[in-house]
Length: 155
Image 1 (cartoon, rainbow, N blue to C red):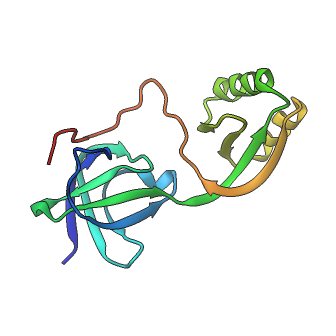
Image 2 (tube, rainbow, N blue to C red):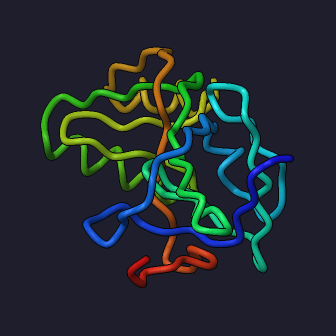
């Protein structure tokens, strides 16, 4: 019988339950409402939320019956690593990507985006160094993003 979860929690000192397992999910797989998820050690958890949610790397699926929790981890996936000349150039590149409403992960010295050859050509034309890599991808969410049903209470 699989574990069952209907709540998401953020990690922190308020979590005092046992870690049962980890689910590795790509960015696209973390947009979810109801699904049977396979943990890295082959157990399964049935996630059944009231509303669709976007799971973030590090989120916790709270298991029913005080059975503990399952950690969500961002799986490696094919992305473009965009490196600017300097910090000003990074802001310019971010503006161009935001203007196209692309999912993007911003780090101090790089931007990660989903692979797209048209966008790659544009970025290279703007002077960026663009490399195809595999990495965990956790893009920022827009102003209208909803986190779904998160539980921020103590357990």
